[in-house]
Image (cartoon, rainbow, N blue to C red):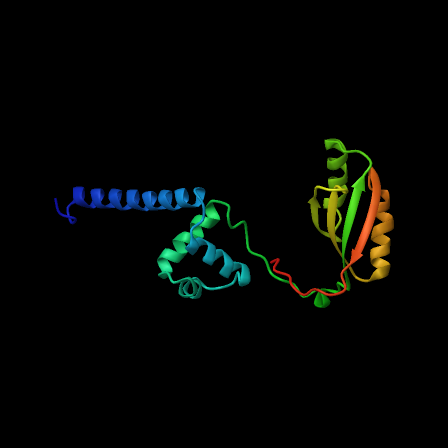
Amino acid sequence: MSAESPDGTILYGFLRKFLVKLRDWVLFQQLMSGLDQLDTNILRALQGDGRLSNADLAKRVGLSASACLRRVQALERSGVIKGYRAVIDPDATGVGIVAYVGVGLTEHTKKAQKDFERVITATPEVRECHNVSGTIEYLLRVEAKDLAAYKNFHLEVLGNAPKMNSITTYIVMDTSKDERA
């Protein structure tokens, strides 16, 4: 049977598709069993610069462009890479104050948490909301134009949020390391 014949072409096409699916399955299994050093290097490079071209990324991690692209796509499909973001200069967007706010609730119930989270997720000043262990329930990252805007957020949003027990604010004075993207 030659690759030119109708049967050979069909068989060749079937085998090619099968091998592509097998390769993807093998990559998926590797991801599920843990990331290898190449995957870790790819992730580190993309965390540093999510706009790297595939060719530049491949050079940086020592892979061919096609092998690198397959690995990145497998990392995306498996949910290891959840998305790509831009790092925004806060001064250029009018953010003058960044604060971390510890919030304690009066009740430790699922309903109290859901009610609080509903208010917080609808609030644009809150850029991050983490449910944490310890003496408080939540740690928020808040961005505001200035101290007056933060005070308004503190009074109007946090002051009216359900089941509030305590609020502790830490104003960021300087940032020596920030690897969030």
